[in-house]
Length: 346
Image (cartoon, rainbow, N blue to C red; front, side, top):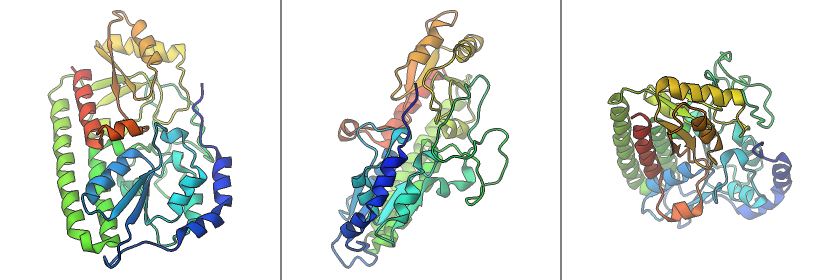
């Protein structure tokens, strides 16, 4: 079964309505001097970005942040509506990931009414730490089916990063690294300060405090991994956690890479993962949020003992309103992931 991809026809329809967006804009609401009462309009694609802005903005009351991918929509399965495109068109700051799932963004920015819009592309912020998508031993070589892609990266993709000519495919799940996130928070802070200098001290203070929490949690991850004799996890699912495991020197096995379109694993893939569970004497098999866990169960059912516990790591690719309203935060999810990781490494 395939995961539905972004429908370029819908995006195209949104771009045709560019004239409507221009009418909605009414000019930029940028407030570089703090001299008017208009709120800074920030639009984010995924939940982590939204939560970071909320933490940096704090109680300033001058930032209105909008989340596009809500109600459980997955980043790989998102196609912007005309309403979404209009929100982007006249915002002051737009934040997006910039990976294969965001091919639609180029058209949205090209047709934006606010030509003074500030843009943060996460992959550009951590360009020196990007990971090429990889296929590890036993991983099913699934079809990504990304829109407009001319080639795929992998272990043979050795070209240097070049925006104009490089077709290397990078893993886009950069938000799952706490260390990357500290850099994203600083970038958000810098942009808010430029847009609203009157609250510069508050934004800087909030960013510093939040990064302190991120750094503290990063140390907890480091300690948890260093104190465990097991350094390998097995995810019987897609694997969007490349940046997380690389931060702490962990090895992994998985059914698919992070952006795979396939959701049904082959017999060979399940057999390989089951054998690895037995070989490494693993007590836990992992799946990701939003997964039905069928592959993980099949892997467990094909092990010798058939008694491994299935745990879930949260990739934050689809966070819904109920979770947000219930107090879920980027930090709370990453803290929960730490507890899952501790158990998986036990």
